[in-house]
Image 1: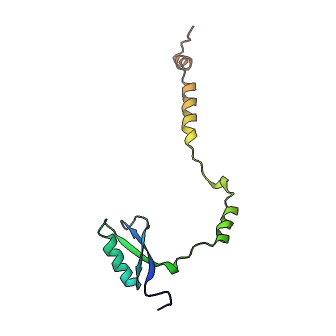
Image 2 (image 1 turned 120 degrees about the vertical axis):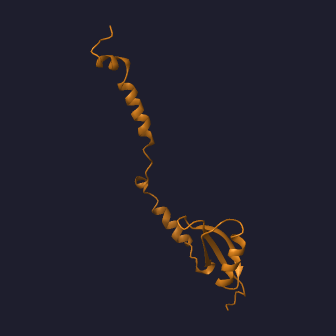
Image 3 (image 1 turned 90 degrees about the vertical axis):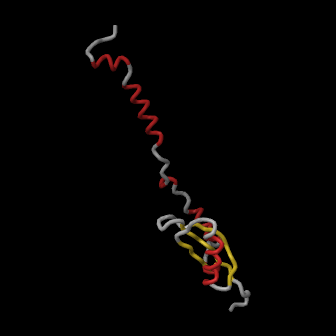
Length: 115
């Protein structure tokens, strides 16, 4: 047992189905992994159906340091990699379709000229 005390902090994650993504739910205090799992099941499974629960000791979760987060800003200059989508093409195509199929164009198909 460490000098931090009897209880440890755990993070609880769950999946609604076997194919759904893992979602963070809440934190809890427990003396060990086994009791943390039991407590998570008691607290969480009453609320909604669940296919899987993951328990992670908070000390085992590593987050980025301030320096590491600042290094991400230097890597954030890759706008050319972000797809903006092609939503504008539908509007552009509709414009060209309407322009091509005007009255003179349609009448020219029948060999008649509008005079």
